[in-house]
Image (cartoon, rainbow, N blue to C red; front, side, top):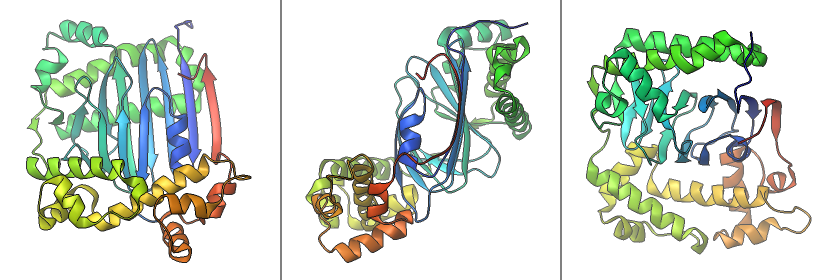
Length: 335
């Protein structure tokens, strides 16, 4: 038996370009910056029905992830296995943690290579209905106002296995989204299991860094964004903008990104150049002009730094078209 529920879709891609991944991903409003050196490899699986959206992402480089989850829904992030570790809004996330996005919360994460996560977005009324049925508190009551919840390892393992099986089934046969059994799992069985896991949580996670250092990083990043086109920024000016000493800023950047402020400033400018090159008309754009716009004047050094970070020359980025490695889509609409 099948159902004609609206907005049923399937979307899967493999990438060697994180900006193209950001442009293609459905429902999410994303902005990624590569932090470590090496060719990016990533995979995204997304599917949904009846206003529910489930995503699986694997990213092979360290990324500064920013953006927003699907609007009007409650989103929960679930590490795909116990080996996953990353920073979420100043908190260290491991494989036994769930991330519950508060309403209006933006994505602010720093992921390591081999990052692998599931995200699930549900209508509020569905979660409220299932909470009442299970005779447990609603989502915000269960989490006690906390964004990151430490869960029982056995329950998390069961949750991860359930998601792995569901995503594997849909990946093998995308038309299974039209099957009643799959729809039941997505709409009822899985969200029930998720709510039970949250209700049985063992506690909350301690922030990975202090509130002072978190605020310093936020201020420093805002300053970097505002002045990206002014060329190299001094560490002194960054410390003034962040309102902390150089030592405190260095500690804060190491905790959040695993690099120094100076290194992050360089990678940020290189990311900005790369984004502009890949979005420009190669017949009318010159690499030297874009590089100069971001304060790179020594072209040999710039090209070497660029190639070290992205494993390609700036001219290759400019010449390349959308580098999608695989494509499969099914459904009624993209958004």
